[in-house]
Length: 226
Image 1 (spheres, rainbow, N blue to C red):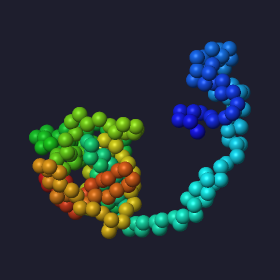
Image 2: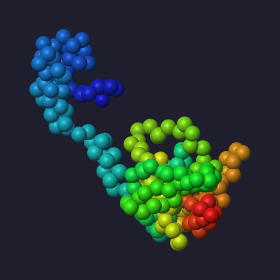
Image 3: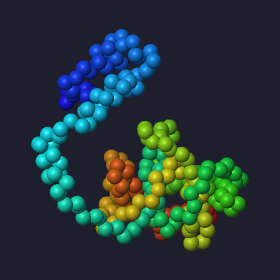
Image 4: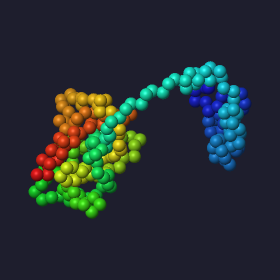
């Protein structure tokens, strides 16, 4: 098939000459608006779909379909993945209690320490709202949402051993099942060491998330709330 061609037929491809891909002089365009609405174009599409399939093409697909499927990677853990700033993070799914819409945060007097934002009402419960960005050294200023994604801010409620806490997050990705043995160590970048709260890095296709250590995270949040 020619590059950029819609069909490769011996018939009259009028859409390329007088239609939307040509000089647009076809008298039917005023009524049809676009060649795809025309019966000539539809008939050409049917002929294209019903043309004989070349043997080389059939052989190539036969070899492809005959290949054995790769063995599924066994998973023994699950994590809730979310984004703060430009960083994808995750917590063990057992910690994730609720995902709620954003709500107004009410500041507490004399408690402006950066990580403790205040308190927030989540389904009738008043919970402390804690920002993970200062705890992890994440710069959230001016970070745009990833292109092509529908990103919505949410409150991720963690069920810690002694209390619940609401974490404002820029976007929720959802549950990621992973193999503990496949978790990688967090990598250091130039002039920046990974946070001690990170247990490792887990992956889900194009997304790589830093998995937070549950015990260390709870200790850090407890220190913020004192």
